Length: 236
Image (cartoon, rainbow, N blue to C red; front, side, top):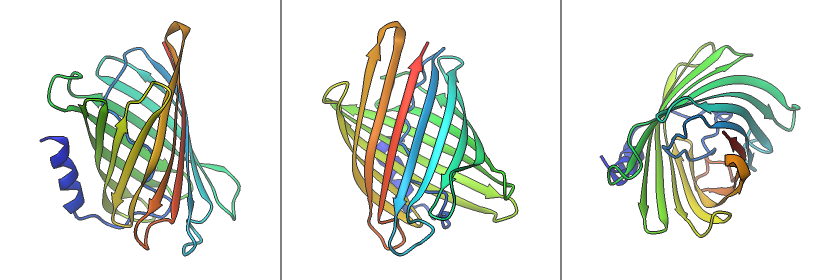
């Protein structure tokens, strides 16, 4: 299977409706793991929607800390908070995440990885488990990345399966400026938009990474716009 096939499969897979507060627009993961690396990450996604009050001015925040346990496994834990027009920012969920690098970089035509996530929402005792196949391939100065996910939710609110696709085409202009185009697809979301990524390296193996993107909804069920921000500090 290559990245092109993975994208095609995602577009035709049946999926169940996505919860409004489970906004798919977030980040596109790469398959790589750095052993012994510690990572502190904050990311947020805000939505605007003139037709859905639940999505208008909704902000979902994640604050996490992770560690590269080996050259194949990276683990991270997140506190998740939500802010809306009616409610101040509250921590509502906890998430555990593990990334598994399946192949060495450049070993095959595409690089492969898996992402596993387990989330619990406190107020509703709702659980979600997600498995995501990650693929990345380089063409000259371009990098294409796809995340194909299958999620299962269970608890007091609902029991259902969901599928989703996140894809990114990135041009490696320079270390501090990499323009990209991202696509997000699910049952109740189809969006596309520009993203800018960059990094600043410091002495001692330290690095600060950032991502900023605006995703435009393409269907009436999608949020009109989604804004995503990411700051990540990495050190050994």
